[in-house]
Length: 209
Image (cartoon, rainbow, N blue to C red; front, side, top):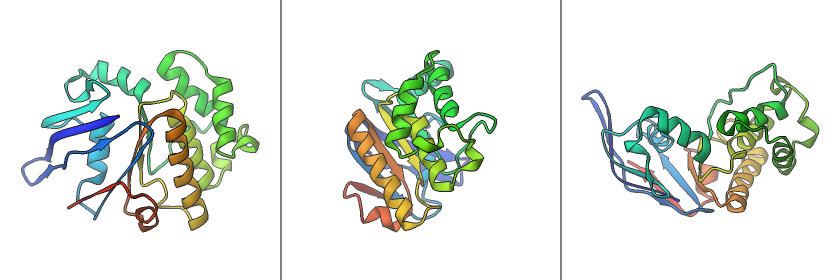
C-alpha cells in the first residue's frame, strides 16, 4: 500500500503545492483528478520518487521514500514502483518482448523472459511480441508500457494519463486491464488523469484543487 502525509512541493516561490493526504491499499485503484496546473503530474512524480518533497512523508509499505538517498531510492524504485508514463519510451531496436525483459534485468539482474511472455499474453499482445515498438498502434504501445511496469510485481503502479490518447474502446480496455492486473498482483494502483471516461469508471478518487 501507499500513504502520504503533509506533502509539500514548490517550484521556486511562485508555485507551491500542498497536497491532500492519500492512501491506496494493495490491489485497489485510486484516481487523482484535477484541472491543468493543479499538480497532478508533480504528485505522481513525487509518489514515484522522481521528485523529492520539501516536507512530508511518502510511505510505500513501511519505507518512507522521501528520506532515501538517491542511490537507495533508485534501487527501491526499480524493485517496488512501476511507471506507466503518458509518452511511452522504448529501446526502438529491441522487440516488444525484449523491452519488457530489459525492465526485469535492469531491476534484478535476471531476465524474466517467461514472465514477460505471460504478461504480454494477458494484455492481448501475444502476436505482437516479436515486433518492434514502432510497428504497434498507440493502444498496443500503452499496453506494452503496462507490461514493462508490472514485470517486477511492484508494490505501487503509477499511471500518468494512460488513456488520454486512446479511443473509447482502447481507453476502457486499458483501464480495465490496469485495474484487473493490480488486483492480481496485489499492487496499489494510482492513476493521474483528466479523462472524464475514467472519472465515471472508478469510485475511489481525489480531485486536486
